[in-house]
Length: 286
Image 1 (tube, rainbow, N blue to C red):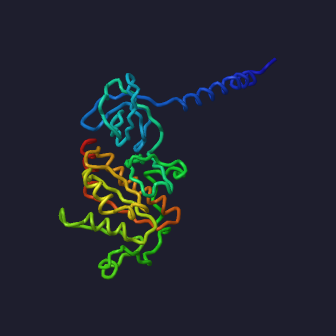
Image 2: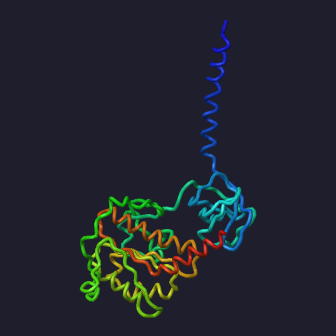
Image 3: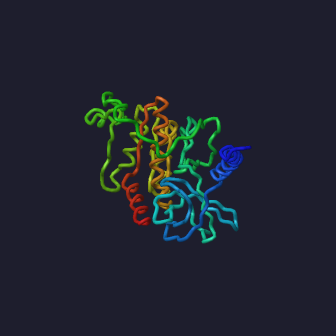
């Protein structure tokens, strides 16, 4: 006669595989939700278990169009998202699909001499060569430990004799250029990018007018300066989140080349517009 314990053990043995299979299916099931409210450039949606910084896809069921958005806040049972694109066509029928991923940027030697957007997409009319892209790099990577940072001991040449002789800068230092509009800050920055002895220069153009971007690349920087530079652009007509991402993407690209053993110059024009974009996002999300 079979004991009750043996019967229970046999029954559990038949149930456990089904439970495991159900859990695997549930884990692979996409987390979906709906748009509940759109206020300005901020989207409120109900979607399960999203995290700050996670990328979600906004799917229009009628057209199949997909727009990406980033989770920037949580309020009660709703997620606050900022779109990484145009809001045209968004409706209460729009499906919100959590991807479980954060933003990454394609990296590799093929980025040198290229002009890209805040999402790593080429803006100069040429596709990124697959053999020049070696992988991807997280946009929100952790900074190195303070004890792993090199000491400030070696000078860097900026290519401007007045600065190199009287205001010598060193590798690893941060330098700010401040002045009234129209006094030549962008020209000075382009001269530094062109004349520095760094291996790679990464430049973030944040909140600039489209005309200013082209002038910087073609006239101020020139072909020689562009050849060993990566330009990340988010003009003033782009959404605030894109302007903020341009600065972070440029930093991630600079960190990638740093990890490859290169000496990298990271420049941003300008940090005031970057701060304004962050303020816009903060005010919109409440």
